Length: 198
Image 1 (tube, one colour):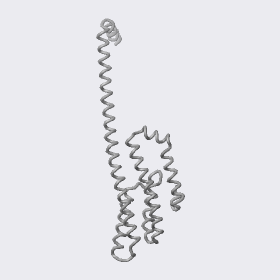
Image 2 (cartoon, rainbow, N blue to C red; image 1 turned 90 degrees about the vertical axis):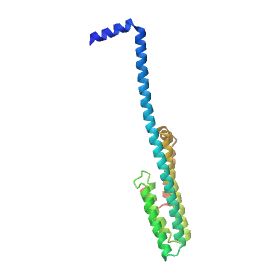
Image 3 (tube, rainbow, N blue to C red; image 1 turned 120 degrees about the vertical axis):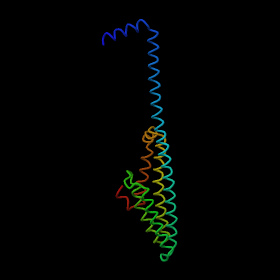
């Protein structure tokens, strides 16, 4: 093996132009391989991000639609007398929407927003049996609660689309911390039943 290396170095000394050409070719091949690998990784990541972001956006829109429909049904229940077929149908529709929305949320989310919103669904429907003013107060809290959750999910979509640099930048700016603190304040002031979990 030592003889082979000695022979190779002798040839390089004898043919410096050929050695430079071979070195340049090796460097070029390595560059092409690295570029192809980099393009492959970037392409896969882009496809993943765009598909996840698109699906999450559809999910947010569907969830927003289901929440709006539940609010509409609850308002109709609150205006309806508590007897008769129409009342029972609306109540069944509200129960179905509660189940649907609960299945769209994550009861184990780290911020507790989804878990509290799932609990708030039943409280909202129970409030339909109260006076109009009491129902409207609970409805307002529920809408605000939903806005916190939808905003948090939208921020996740934006962060996923922008990548790790945006995540780092948002941490430096403290945007998530500000939203989290605002949510905790909302829970403490408006949702006394949920504040013990926060």
